[in-house]
Amino acid sequence: MSETILFDYWRSSASYRLRIALNLAGIPYRAVSIDLVKGEQKSPEHLERNPQGLVPVLEIDEHRMTQSLAILEYLDTTRDMGLLPTDPAQRARVQALAHSIAVDIHPVCNLQVVGFAASKSDTPAEARVDWMKRFIRPGLQAFEVMLDDFDQSPYCVGKTPGLADICLMPQIYNARRWEVDISDLPRLLAVEAACAENPAFAAAYPDQVQP
Image 1 (cartoon, rainbow, N blue to C red):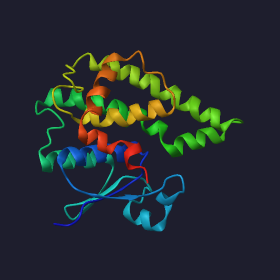
Image 2: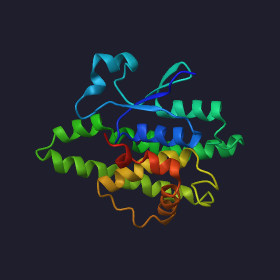
Image 3: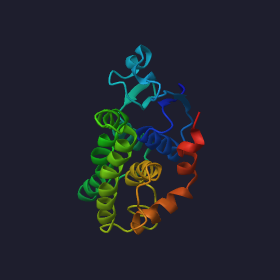
């Protein structure tokens, strides 16, 4: 069997999702750092892996894959991870929960987007922080309300970690990094505590994998 290789960056939310999933699936992998701050994602070598110039890229089962949500679906399907319910309606509701972060919050807080927005300000450092707070907190407030439709026992939608938890934890990391107040979101914080005790999540934590 070929080696599984994850091209990632330690602070990349999308890469963080895959580290969690690979750990949950018990798939050994070799991580190759692509330094986004240094612009290594735009190198010819990496653009050959992913023409979008993004991370993560996962090489697994003789395939090369991009886009974290698509890769998570592949892992869920091929490794029977149970990241989503089988009932179609419930599956759609849980996907909506996960996508509220991965599709709505994450893209506007992408490094390229934030960097461009901050460059238009006379105080780019402050603008960067303001931008993050502007989008992260309302998004997580909405996520908290959405959690009311599910039983956190102890994860977002039940007794085992799933797609919503995999998307949530990187966003909580970003919230804390940018000093976004989430102290008034008890359901979210309870899920965070449960995930923090799970070895698969703990081993994927950015500060644990920082080069």
